[in-house]
Amino acid sequence: MPAGVVPERPVVTGHQPDLFDALLEMTAPSAPLPADAHAGVEQAREGTSEWVRSQLRTAITHLARTRETFTSDDLEREAIDCKPNQIGAAMRAARQAGLIEPTGEATLSTRPSAHARVVRVWRAAA
Image (tube, rainbow, N blue to C red; front, side, top):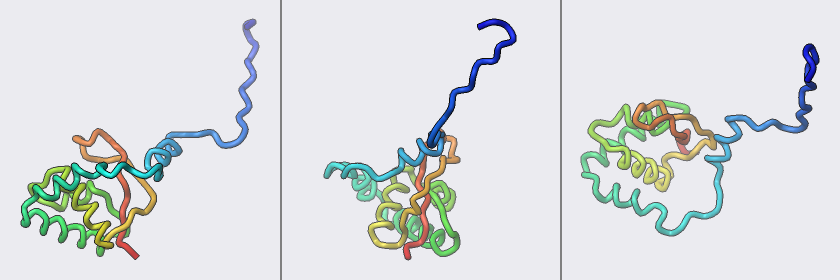
């Protein structure tokens, strides 16, 4: 291209996908999960002491009553001596019990060990 000539900018029509579109695609419901998809979560729940389960239940109830929305990161900050898989199992159990529901939103985890992975945003069930 000769000096001084400015190339034409490409014309973008329609919606230009961005990072947030990719985030929504990653968290959007897709095909049904296989029957054993949550086997690890169930194993984590079964391997959790009653004291830890009680602590997690209490913390989830507290978050659901006192915050408009929350994530598993918030739960981990509230809980003591819990492993990440136990937190996931507790969130799933709270959803199944009708205590919480997903908002349909997601955010990036703030925990360094989570390496900014996508986490769901939750709220008290209606």
